[in-house]
Length: 171
Ligand SMILES: [Zn+2]
Image (cartoon, rainbow, N blue to C red; front, side, top):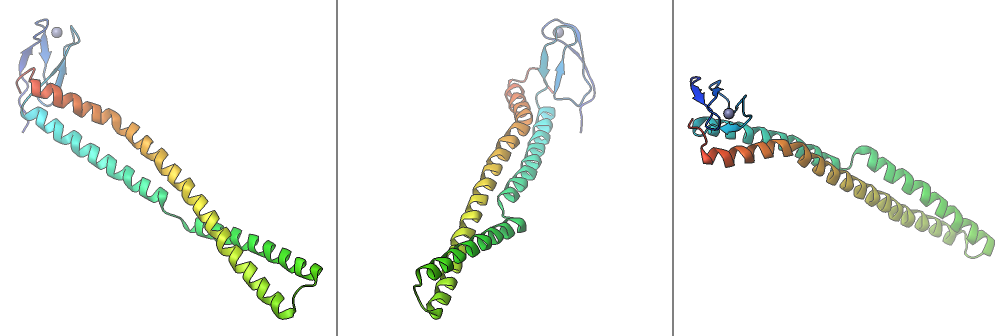
């Protein structure tokens, strides 16, 4: 329940303060000094800010978690680039074997299979790890962005908690 609006006087300059009965702080329109209302009102404002910060942080943290998860496009890219690279490696191996005239048809087949799959695994892993590093960097940037976005609310809360305990004006 909100307090009824009361007539208060500015402790600084004695001018009347307009109290809406709800706000946790009042700024004197004459001397511009800001006063905090202690008691229930400060507690309500504290709880409201705490809940607002928690909800905003939760939304940001979901975004940050998602930014780190590989999407389908990341898997496709790793497999595609791994495949293209592996075909190139395999062709080089085939050409080298043909030019040097080493190996029979059987060993050429084994060499082709082995060169394809080994280079496919190594290249796909390399691309996937590189993308994971990029996602990690993006998540770190989002964390900084989150803290910047939450800063005004956190400062407001810290200000309220400090001043509220001082109890400048009784609530
Ligand atoms: Zn004043």
